[in-house]
Length: 165
Image 1 (tube, helix red, strand yellow):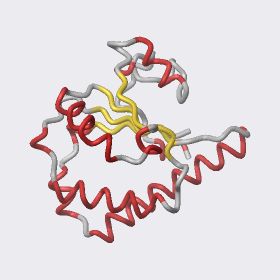
Image 2 (cartoon, helix red, strand yellow; image 1 turned 60 degrees about the horizontal axis):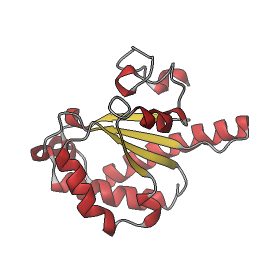
Image 3 (cartoon, rainbow, N blue to C red; image 1 turned 180 degrees about the vertical axis):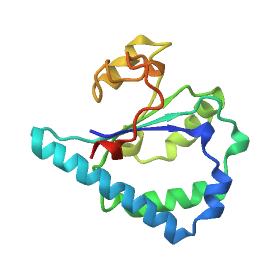
Image 4 (cartoon, rainbow, N blue to C red; image 1 turned 135 degrees about the horizontal axis):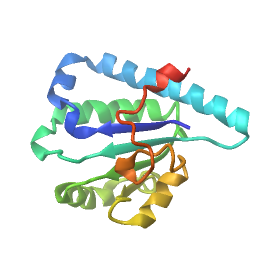
C-alpha cells in the first residue's frame, strides 16, 4: 500500500494557504487521491487483499503558533469533498511524536468527530511503547519502516514513491 509521512513542523501552513485558491486546493486533493486510489486498486487486484492508505503525521517540534485557520478550513473542505469519491481510501492515520497540546486538542475535538473517523486515528509512539510497533507492522515490514518509528530502515528521507512507478 501507500504510506505517507508528513512532517508537520516542516510545513508552512500560512504560505500554503496564500499560494493556492480554493479550487486549486480541491484539485490538488483530488489528484493526490486519484493517484493513490489507482495504486491501491492495482495492488488490491494483484494481491487479492484490500489495500488502504496509511498517513503518518509526525508532529515532532510542531508549535501551535504555526497553525493557520485558512489552511485548516480549506483543507477540511477539500477532504470533505474528495471523501465522497474515495470513501474507503484511508486505512488509518497515525499521529507520532505528539506534544501534549496536540493530545489535549484531540481530546477536546474527539467527541465531535464521526465514529468512523475516530476509529481511524491512533496516537502511536513505538520508541516509547514497543507495543505500538504492531500498528505499523500491519502496513509495512520492520525492515522498510524508518528507524525513527521503530523499524530497521536507516534511510531518511525515504525515496519518492513517484520514482517507483
